[in-house]
Length: 405
Ligand code: 7TS
Image (tube, rainbow, N blue to C red; front, side, top):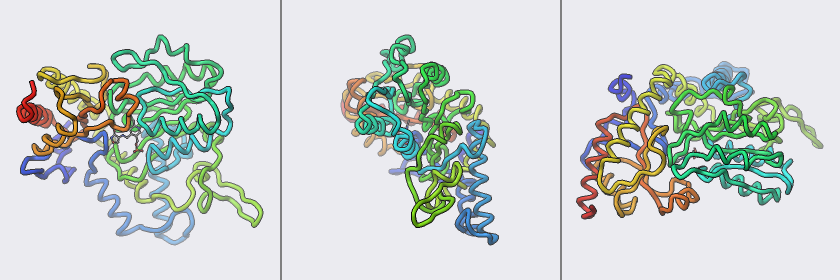
């Protein structure tokens, strides 16, 4: 992979911060956008802007073609058999909530939802609320001490009561890549539906929802070089058919009378109102961009950088790394001596190094790790080993500054 050529596609990376060259190591929060995606947005707004699915004029047709073309690209990108299986949402959070509101009426107090303690709040709080609303039980899969799901104990947590299993493909804190196909097969044996949160998976490696066989798969455009405000709910057709619309209005209806209404077919039934047309087009352009580089090359680059960062950081005195040392995707989470992560991030920012510090929207996981917060460096296709070295040097300076050992 030609990282120098890739970096030239990202104008934002070529700047100094506090007089130092920027090392952007926070792509797990949001990825930067290449010129190709920004050009697609410009093309749409400068030449094609119109509402979709209604106008017969030329601009309306072009906008509709581009919007639906992006849906087809997205479907192909994740191995979905039909474009109809892609519902555009605002982000991962909205996609999870769409299922949580639209599918869960069927749950009764005898039923169970099974998730993991490593979920991002956006794949945890909606299920807590569902459990409260429906009076059903929310359970958590057991974790091994290294943060991986305890697959030996997992079958004890699955029974015919389990109606939904929801888990992340990749943890945004531990970096672990969960065996989602294996867990899906186990969940299907007891008749549960399965939702996978792919927010930290889709950007980094080739995802094939058909091979995983999950019922729902959700992710955000902004973590894979697309604009903010566009996300995806993929579903098996029979699973999507079970969703009752959660927003009503224009775009999603077939007929409306004063008394009653009928709905369009999937996926439009679940996309009420004028959608994020430019966002979807930007997502299509991001898919083209990532595919032009190749998801296998992107994965190999991410794996190599993560392994290098683990090696460098584990050799540094005072660094505690959280999560397993192998099988991680795209990020390293750690603490430096007893310095508060926010202080670490403030000093790193002075050195031009952008990382995230805090609970990473995973407060229960922080409790499990027995820390209030952590530092996290995350990598993407435009990052380099030199930036990992910049991180290490900046951490050295942080340690000196705080007089830590
Ligand atoms: N699921 C996972 C695994 C995530 O990492 C995130 C965002 C979300 C869901 C929510 O995505 P959204 O686009 O709906 O907000 N994670 C992070 C992060 O780690 N730092 O900032 C956002």
